[in-house]
Image (cartoon, rainbow, N blue to C red; front, side, top):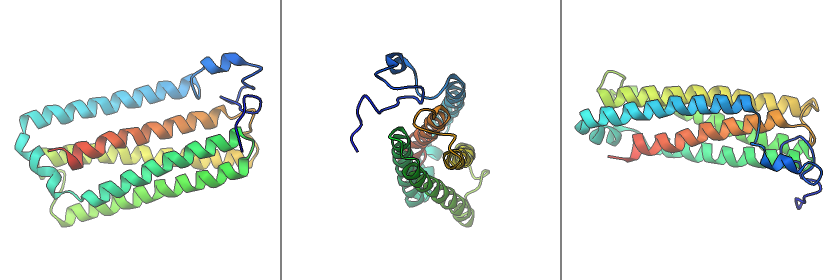
Amino acid sequence: MTITAIDFHLNGSGEVTKEPETLNKIPGNRAVWVGIFAEMTEFALFFLVYFIAKAHYPEQFNQGPLKLNTLAGTLNTFALISSSYFVAKALASVRLNDPEKSIRWLWRAVFCGGVYLVIKIWEYHWNVDQGITTNTNNFYTVYYYLTFNHLLHVTWASGSLLWAIRQLKAGNYTQQNHLGFTAIACYWHMVDLAWVIIFPLLYVLR
């Protein structure tokens, strides 16, 4: 289906042709963006700690990534990038007044979130079997702190997707009114973006 200016509802608040001011609105709502900026600030502080620790313990941070399971990190990156695509397709579907298709896309996104969580938990067990714990050295302390914090974000972001599915099934998110769904999608993309930064820092860069 082709999106036209007549039937495309930008932010769940009216048609673009009838309410052109919606073009100047940010996606979602103010509350979610306060949360997103707060979360981004939190992760920015984590990244600052990473670079400070790396400057003080360069050898640990050069050798640390070599012992991590890069395949697990790569698979999780693929899972989260795929999930963002599915969420974007879900949002596009509800804007085109196709809630059933939107629900199907969201279930795929939830599946990807679940895959991420399963792989991450398996990776932690694999680390322990290799003798990698929070007390091994400073690099692994930062690694566990960053990745576990991100795992928590993925967990409750996945819960928000399940909430969106419930709202779609109940008819509460429609083509004309899906502001909450847009806010959820924005938060999910923020969580994915954080991982796109975390992955090279912990698994790739030396």
